[in-house]
Image (tube, rainbow, N blue to C red; front, top):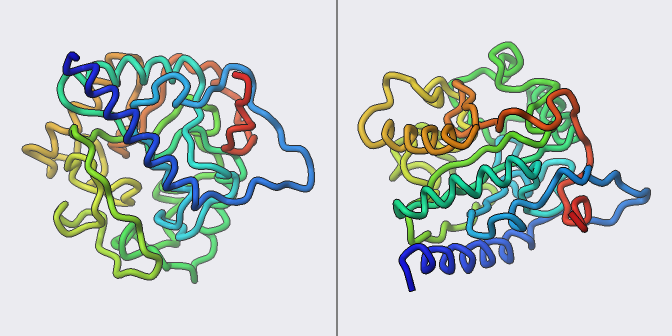
Length: 270
């Protein structure tokens, strides 16, 4: 068996295990009225590349809101097919180098963005401040561009992701109420993540998250360059303010913001 084939088998097994664990935290799927489904151009990433690790943060309480986010019914990555195929090509490149992609968020329904907006306007809710925005006054989240009423994620071709080294090591679950550590603390101190060291954690509201921040040097800068270079070669454009945020170009839906839920039924038959 070749090294690449072995890596594929390992990643598929890891992805299946993570899906089984995170599925327990998903919100109930029952709805009073029929939900909209995704256009046929959308797919579950796992159907195109089952080796890409998925840690869908917004189905859990370990995110800046501190609770599962509206519209995330099940922990899976949904994207447009061209974006999924480009991620598959990037994954093949990384596997040959002993790494894998890991996605934190993919398509994001408009109702989830609305949840973020409501949370940002509630200045009394600062439960997760110590980890995700310790140096930012919550009243500044809109002005500073951390929260907006529309998100490119809702168009289906934007992903938040990182790189993990093979073999993929497990990460412990977040325990609600546990002591929080700033997202820009040294990797050994902040919440454990099997990502390579990118200098900050995911969703860190801080200027250190800017991809090319000059304070990020050495291994951390090299890791960011690996992610950006690998994805850039496959048509993804990085958002300079967030090292984890990439959009596939050209987008199939550059002007449409969707609101179907993140659930397997949304892309059933695709």
